[in-house]
Image (spheres, rainbow, N blue to C red):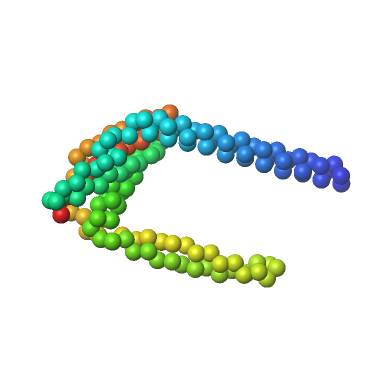
Length: 145
């Protein structure tokens, strides 16, 4: 019985150590990608142009696959345009639960929604950066007001 408890404890400890090592390695990779990407962020992405006739939105997408990174960047850029067309609406959802010991727990989830019709959106600038096995796509889109 003692051997079984010891083996169970040993396996649980090894699992915890392995997970910590994986988390640490993942954070290091994420930090490295962020550092490399930071050095290559286009100026037009950091400071999108402004105009009285057009709206501009800059978006970024990161993925192991170029097409997915492009789609994420386009969604992000469209969101920036939509936020300029209509004000985002925030909704709070409260969830109450009880623990086994009888304690009440309450969690609040905030959900932000932007509804806007976007017409004639065109990509005017695009930059692709490859960092390791990840692609980072930067897009600048425009739309008439």
